Image (cartoon, rainbow, N blue to C red):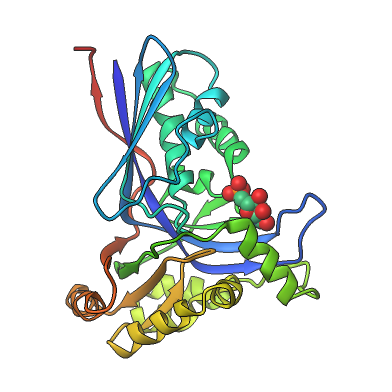
Length: 299
Ligand code: C5P
């Protein structure tokens, strides 16, 4: 038997970061949105534990571990029973791009394992397993548009009346999330303990108005990411000059995302940016969290 689960990339519409806690993690007040770039994870019964990783042509999977440190394999170790398994990951989400690609794989593996073995674990049990794997993994299960607090793992769906068109520009070389947080600490040694709240952003999402949402987008990790990669500032300026309502770094970067006013508007920005950047994608949000796309009997 095998089960395939699809999980989406995330962007942060608001990412408020506070001073580091005693455990080293930063308190967050964030608004996640799942957008239509997906990784597929297939978990199969097998004679021994194995893993294979492949990617759509624009994705360089060479940095993805193919051993027990891969988050999908760690997810299976969290799970209560079963094995050995073969895990096949097919990636469309940029690697080390600030779009929670690893978290999507972890969430997908947790759900695939649960469904493969007909465990039917309650949502709170899967969410607790997800939180142990990483701060963004619970959101990858939930999807849609949601507020994240704690270190990002305490997730609550929020009202979103929009259909939002995004242009996504991944970078050839990823950025390390811990490095970007460390740089935030260097730039903001006096950061307040409480992260900034997304009050206006929540109102903008409920209004469904792109111009209002564009004004309310906020990412405290954008400044350290651009300080580490100044070319990201040039990319954001170019996208905005070419008609995007607003450009921003996605999470800890280096992927940049551009909010557009419509599907037609997003196609125009894709065309304009494609003259200077190799990989320019379009995506829509919000989309669903991790979900089963197929279940197959053994051949
Ligand atoms: O939770 P996750 O494994 O995704 O986090 C990766 C790294 O990002 C952590 O080890 C930490 O350095 C940083 N991080 C943080 N504060 C958060 C989330 C992540 O400092 N709220």
